Image 1 (spheres, helix red, strand yellow):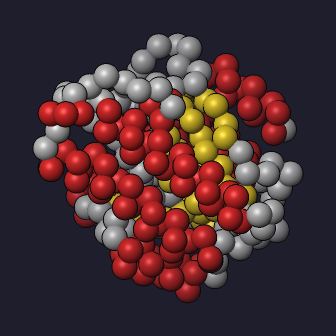
Image 2 (tube, protein in one colour):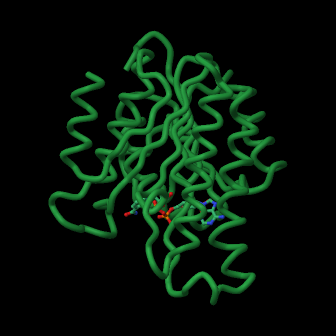
Image 3 (cartoon, rainbow, N blue to C red):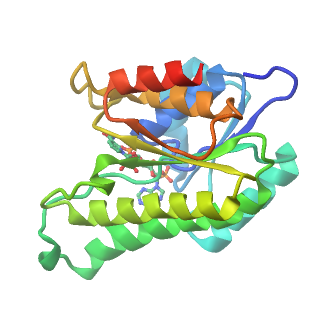
Length: 238
Ligand SMILES: NC(=O)c1ccc[n+]([C@@H]2O[C@H](COP(=O)([O-])OP(=O)(O)OC[C@H]3O[C@@H](n4cnc5c(N)ncnc54)[C@H](OP(=O)(O)O)[C@@H]3O)[C@@H](O)[C@H]2O)c1
C-alpha cells in the first residue's frame, strides 16, 4: 500500500463475519479504517474480537448508517475528521432462509429486502460524491445474487438488486470512479470454519485491498467463489 499518505477506508458492515477480514486487511495495510455499527454493544464486542489488531487507526463507533440521513452524516463526519474518503467496502447483509417467496410476511420483506437494500443505497448516495478517486467502492454479495436458492429467495432478490446497483454506479461514474462487486461463495469466517476450499474472510479482505491499490483495476465484478479464485484474483492484481 502506498506509504505517502494514509488511505481512508469506510467499511459499513465491518463488524460482521466477512467484514472482519476486510477490516483486518486494511488495518494491516496501514489504512485508517472507519467502522460504524448500529449497536454500542456490537462495537465493544468487535473491538474485543480484533484484539491487538485494533490499533489507533481503527475508528469504530456506534452510528446508525441504515437511513439516508444517518449515512449522510457519517460520510460528512468522515470527510471532516479524516479529510476525505478514499475507499468503501460494503459487506452489509447477512443470511435469511426458511420460506418460499409466497409465504413471506411484511416483516420478512422489511428485514431481508427493504432494510438491507436501503442501507446499501443510503451509503452509496452519501459516499459516491465524496470519493477522492484515489481508491474504489466495492460492494460484497454472494452467488445467490445470480442463482436462485429455494427458501432464501429474499436474499437472492436483495443481492441481485445490490449487484445491479454496482453496475449502474459503475456505468454512471464513467471512468471517474471505480466501483466493484465482490461475488462470494460460502466464506470461512471466525464463526464458520467451513471447508478448506472455501474462500476465507481474510482472502476477501486481501482482494479488497489489492483492488483499492491498483488504479488500473477499472470497475469490475470479481468472482471469489473459492479460495483458489481469490488467489487467482490476487495474482492478477499483483
Ligand atoms: N458469510 C458468508 O458465508 C457469505 C457468503 C456469501 C456472501 N456473503 C455476503 O457477504 C455480506 C456480509 O455477510 P456476513 O456473513 O458478513 O453477514 P453478517 O455477519 O451478518 O454481517 C453483516 C453486517 O451488515 C451490517 N448491517 C447493516 N445494515 C443491516 C441491516 N439492515 N440488517 C442486517 N445487517 C445490517 C451489520 O452491521 P452492524 O450491525 O454492526 O451495523 C452486520 O455486521 C453479505 O452481503 C452476504 O450476502 C456472505
